Length: 247
Ligand SMILES: [Zn+2]
Image 1 (spheres, protein in one colour):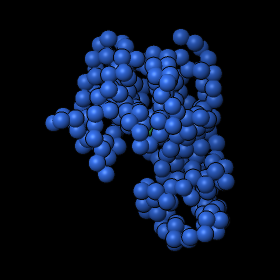
Image 2: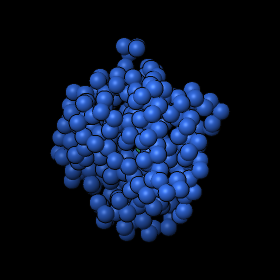
Image 3: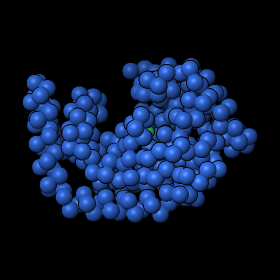
């Protein structure tokens, strides 16, 4: 195994980027998570002119940040030091489980007021909210996606990258696999806290069986018993392609 592990760099989310993200999210099914936490966004979400809307979002973010200033810098410090205590072990263990090396690449964690934490596979960056109590689990979850998709690309070089995103099956598999990896006893030794499946994924079924359970069993068989992560991905993708998703 290579010694050059990547490092997670913590930064305050640039205002421009944060405004764009919130602008995008306000138009999706996830908007409720934002407006629940910051009801002020409700009024803004009704503005029809896009430029005006973005300007209003930006102003509101500045206000929220000003109000949360101390909490945010404290949050940043705590999140960072909590993470750095387990960073090396966590990265090494993920590489062992997923059976691929970390490339020499920086990972950026943006501290954001946004309660939704998306990840960006192109830049290896993600958001984490300053008041998240499970920040280590969230960070481990997001960075495991980066390594997982590196492996996924090795196994399926022909699958296009846009398939890695919502709502494709490749994306779905990554979101079901990640909590299974983090809840593997080898990760639990380090993390000490459980990750969970998305609520929307908990009841998906293959015939009579829960999809999460089927994938878990494949994980036990291939990853734990046979130490063969590639076959796990291949078999799981076959299974997940049969799932019918009703909207
Ligand atoms: Zn995820």
